[in-house]
Image (cartoon, rainbow, N blue to C red; front, side, top):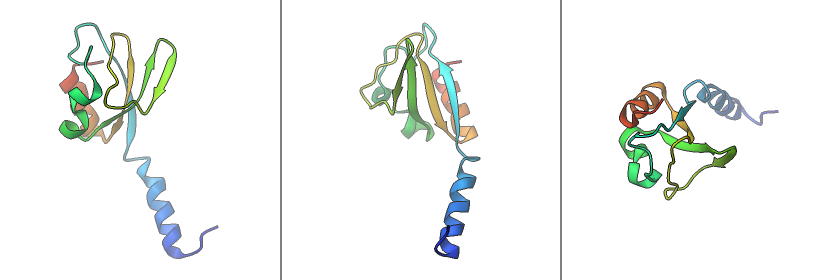
Length: 96
């Protein structure tokens, strides 16, 4: 399966990465500062190190939304990052 010990080490590190990065889903509530803002305007990655990787809107999943994606009330946003970074996003955006 592995061509070398280095391949094995690389795969072991990648398998462990799943424990370091977690996905959190957060609903955009009416009045939230995220409402009617684009991903680019929010600059979440620069501010916290997290990324929006998906948004569920009215039953449709938008994977890997670009910087022009504008959030609406009721959207459910998927945020990926480490624990502290995801916590910072939730506090910064006041979303639940």
